[in-house]
Amino acid sequence: MPVLDPIDLRSDTVTKPSPDMRKAMYEAEVGDDVFGEDPTANLLQEKLADLLGKEKALFVPSGVMGNQLCVKAHTEPGDEVILDYDSHIFNYETTASSIISGVQLHPLPGLRGVVTADQIKQAVRPRAYYLPRTTLVCLENTHNRAGGTVFPLEEIQRIRDLADEVGLKMHLDGARLWNALVATGVPLAEYCKYFDSVSVCFSKGLGAPVGSAIAGSAALIERAHRYRKILGGGMRQIGILAAAAQYALNHNIARLKEDHEKAKYLAQELSHLKTLKIDPASVQTNIVLIDVRETGRSTDEVLKMLRESGVLLTPEKQTIVRAVTHLDVTRAQIEQAVEVFRKLFH
Image (cartoon, rainbow, N blue to C red; front, top):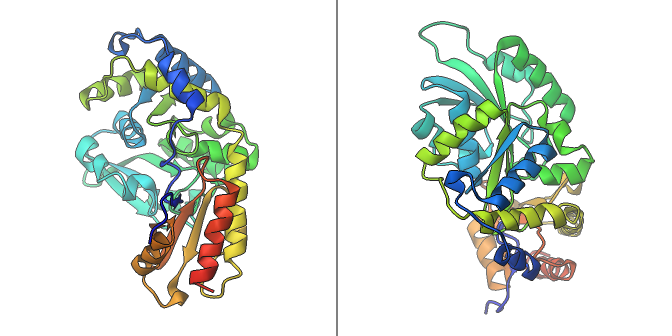
């Protein structure tokens, strides 16, 4: 029988606003954002632009919209965008880039989410009228499908040098950039200065109920703002949502360290089970990838067994399941989850 309150490790998006966050939302001063008159949204955008070291920022409903607005703002139909094969934009955004921007995605096989400047250099198309024009490179930090890995700053610098040499723009899918900050101590603005645009998310590890943002030059944000309206993102009294994001920025970044520690503990304990394959050293932030092939069961069967014992995970790749720690799961619950794994997969 399933327990009444399962331990939900499916994603850091399952968090719910805390009482204090709800209070901030309730008390938010609001106005009509389509007229640029929502003071809470304006304050959030100014704060975020400063944090990321950019001229302007724009609040958007979702991470997918944020990424796609930036792709649209940087490209023309018929262009080509280079990115990692396992990236969120390529796998989880419903081919939006081809639908919205009319561009072709050129995925490269990264190593745990990291594509190199040398790979990108080989992938850039020669200038010829019968070839797509390579105009944009998209990187992801931290990298979801690679297990929350941090993209090395040194490689980002090399890619930027190449981009400047051959005339490419760079976009950062930084949905979990906060996790990279906490894991490495590298300031947000240092990561972002190499990119022409950045997207960040408030509704994952930071615990807000909804919302993302993009940042870049004033000209880029003006262009993206227009496309946000076209895509139905012209919202009205969004200060209620912006207040949650503002609260998240003020209170929930440093505590991501706790999520990282919980993930590392989970990985370390599960690595002792012979039928599970995990490299604890690979866990850099809050995502744990668990290879279950030696259990003799499919990922669906494994997930069903866990679910019936009160632990929720998600499938990742063919033989891999994923656990994500977050602010709504305690260390004690992680310890309970470990006991469930031990009972089922000793």
